[in-house]
Each structure stands twice: as structure tokens, then as C-alpha cells.
Picture 1 (tube, rainbow, N blue to C red):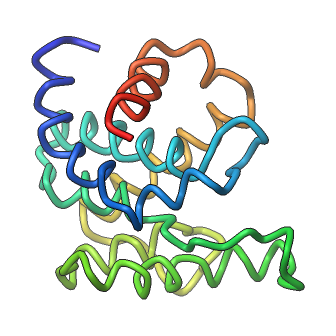
Picture 2 (tube, one colour; picture 1 turned 120 degrees about the vertical axis):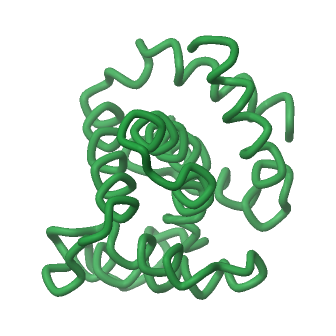
Length: 165
């Protein structure tokens, strides 16, 4: 990551990483055993930031929505909720859990729509909704494929998380 780019991102994301509610996300695995929900959310937030800079999106909005998009705070292994149901209900759980973050309607919409195409009726139409949805898919693929561990940006994000915790 280029120093100026990462510094800009860090200035926006550090308050979220330090937040006790968001820190809870580190307890839950996401996509693979070694990647926490917090790791994934930081990655989505960073990729959203890069895409928003490139495509003239609303940078603060996508950073915030990226950090909060999976704030469901649930260990799915300890529930009776099936895999498909998890995919469809967790965006609203994230919005509900993010109540203390003063989400705008646009940020709520981004979070609710990030699981498209699984949530067929919640189609991302605005640029920022598309940016976070695409970032989430890119990051998910990188995590599941193992590419995550080879990306310099992910290594830097994990170091930042450890420093700020």
C-alpha cells in the first residue's frame, strides 16, 4: 500500500477499530478459520476505499459501511440458523447492531444490500452500494482462495489491527 493512501485510510478507520463493539468482531471467524470478521470488515473497508477513490464514490461513507457491513456479532456455530438464512438475515443484524454509529440512510442501504445477489430483492443501485457489494465479493474470494495471505495490503491491515487493539 502506498503510504499516502494507507495514511488516509487509517485516519478514517482507526476510530472504528478501537471501538469495543467492533472489537467483538475479532471473536468470530469469517469465511475461513484464520480470518476474523474484523479482519474481513477491515479488508472490505479498504477495498471499498480504493474503489471509491478510483470511481469517485463517497469515501467516508464506504469506509464506514465497509467496517460495519458484517457487524452481526453472532457465532453461527452456536445457533440453529442454516447457512442460507445467515446470508439473508445478517445484513439487518449488522444495521441493528450499528445503531450507536449514527448510520445515515445511505449507509444502512449499503449494509442491507451488500449480500446481493443472495438477497435478490435488495439490489444495489447507487454507486456506493455497488462499491461495497463488489468489494465484499472480491474480499470473500481472496479469503476463501487463500490469496488473502499473499496480499501486502492484508498483512498491513492485520498489523494495524494489532497495534490499535
